[in-house]
Length: 401
Image 1 (cartoon, rainbow, N blue to C red):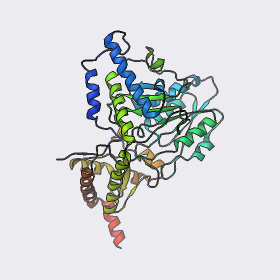
Image 2 (tube, one colour):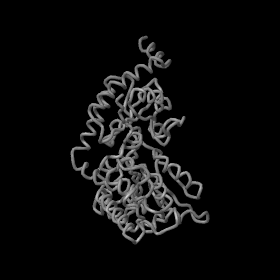
Image 3 (cartoon, rainbow, N blue to C red):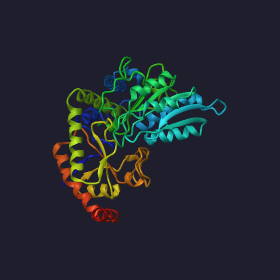
Image 4 (tube, rainbow, N blue to C red):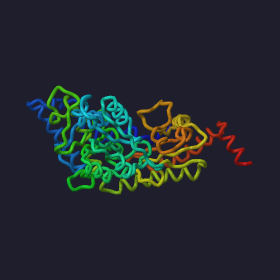
């Protein structure tokens, strides 16, 4: 059976070029990058090369790149690292703003901050899943210290007006962080001092969402932003993140960044968006009572989130998996959750429709043939499940009447 993978927002396959770049650093070049002998210095040079490659992708200084274990650590480091001095119960309360549609790495960290004498505001979104600048302006207070807004949503792919939101935060004297895990490698992200993202102070990425390995990520920390470490034990990463560097992982992320830099300069993003649109339009043309969550909003090129009324998403995910197509009902971090997606309900979807929504996320490895095969499998699977659905049968009778 031909297996088709359309769950790239959960994780991406390691590119062969990335694997080949990493391979020597597991066996031949195993040195600790903090050691001064030849083995260590070879590892240090590889880490520095990767840091430079990532800095080129984001048009920032290499010294502004902090290597971490991935997106969750980077998000937590952004919040707790900038607010450590504000956590004292004796101080006047500090205020933080985030949104109702963030990844749980931000939401749960924000909830923890609330238990540590910090006020947190969760901004609502529009029906399209967009955080409007006016909402942020209305939420800003004199004691607002940090604003954190996801760049591209992991469930819907909707892209936020990050440049405008960051400028609002800066005008109010607050720092601005964005979780760009689903944007990195898919959108041009210019963090340079004169670039469109010049007001972004902190930015998160995760390697395994852009064809690098799991277990490595970065936090961009703009020059002059004070960041207190969450872990202690060494002076690694300019004293911002203690712990021996994951050299092979860092090398892989650096290679993936080089590949992404080249891909973004080609027709790659446009071709990927065309494949996504072909899939999306093909589904809507063949399946009644279906629609796109976030339709009309700007989205990353690889993602579509579609509701199929009168079925359960979990049943459709399983049915498609049995036919060789891997998709998702939402965030991989919430797999098995019984609650409907917090992102979709924040957009105004009913619990029933949210539970009937499927995320299709392609990668740069997805082919036209795979999209065409998916367009054979999906309508048939939906039709079969609806035949078994009492609500679909009731709807059909009501429609005929």
